[in-house]
Length: 517
Image (cartoon, rainbow, N blue to C red; front, side, top):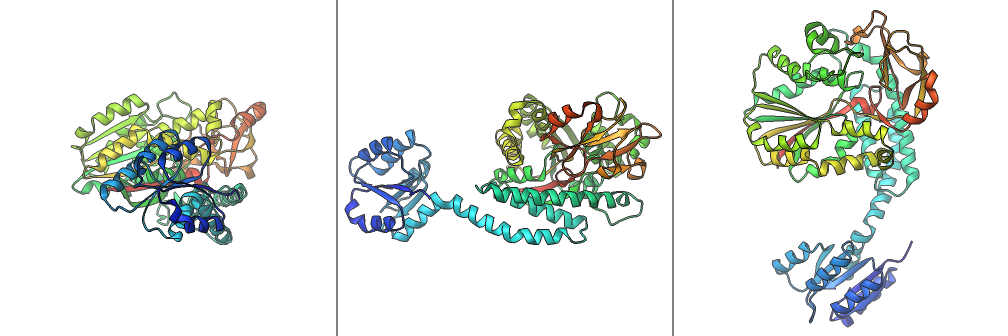
């Protein structure tokens, strides 16, 4: 490991020699100066890892030296050391972006702690994270070998996402690779679990089912409307649980996560099915039968999600409630900014729904644009882009505005996505749906062992385009490729983020209730 270089600047540097000797014995390289001007010149010509700077020096003061250093070296950590405990001096130093603030007389161990905090934190956290995951790896593997129910799978996925986010800061790629392999093993078992249980969840009278898309509003959201306050529901299309966790910290200054849970998206994990089911409070087949004017079949023209407001209004009528409500679908930045300007008026409604489509558009754009593939080459980078977008988005501004008001804020999504890797060959005619993670239609040819097949879609609440129509779903990281164009599909879509099939990332999705601080 390279030796860290310290610059210590103090007009009484001679009396600090015992501290300097202590640090050198600990393996640090220390240079000492007694004035700010020499320090600025030296820093411009030599690299240092950290600077200890006396606040009260004759000539150029510590605060003035700090400000000049930060102009040309904004990322250099500077620890201010002072005899004064005046609040104004502390505020000046903190406002100039110091790394730490120590009051004289400082003890050697205080200096050492500050160094470890500023120079070694990432390494120490990484080592601790790797060690902790190594201990948990066996525990998770043992859990995966058990007889898991739908609640157990939620717990497993939460643990895997926790370690995935924790290992993001680690420089040990080998441990991240081990986690990826364990996640792939979990997804293989999860696919089998869904294949065994999904049909039973939709049988009438079976109460032992997870919270599914079409149950979400009635069981979780509508009860919030009975309270004497406005409710804002943000549905961020295609938001994975790990993406939610990556942006959660940005909201911490404004909200508490009062309650967080994962619910199960219905199949197919695609907007046409999951989001229509969510707003209608019905499975697609029931929508088609009771409100055919609001259902657009798989192979028809666009407009498959054009009636969400109408479906929601019908749900209110069936639930015998009549709240004042608004519905808005954000498809571009300009509309988002104009909507934000309307928020004072929206506060007069009991219920406001904002569907935000950016993450889904990012997923599709990444498939088609090479530059986005490079920027979001894996899950970690995909999370990073999502966080960066959110931090600078009107959506974040909307939430910050609402944090100042006495309203309930709920964040959720309709489905997630998964990075696909393995092409699975199928044969179908022109009347087969185009999605890469599920197919529906007639005359489908495939290997039954490679898919989850539903020969009778109506038993799980899905519609049929033709009398002989069936559904098949890809599991794990598989995606469907046609035999007559297999090589193109295999190369073009490999390592893209897709949805519609069966995986933890697509089906186990966040529902979060926020409370303003």
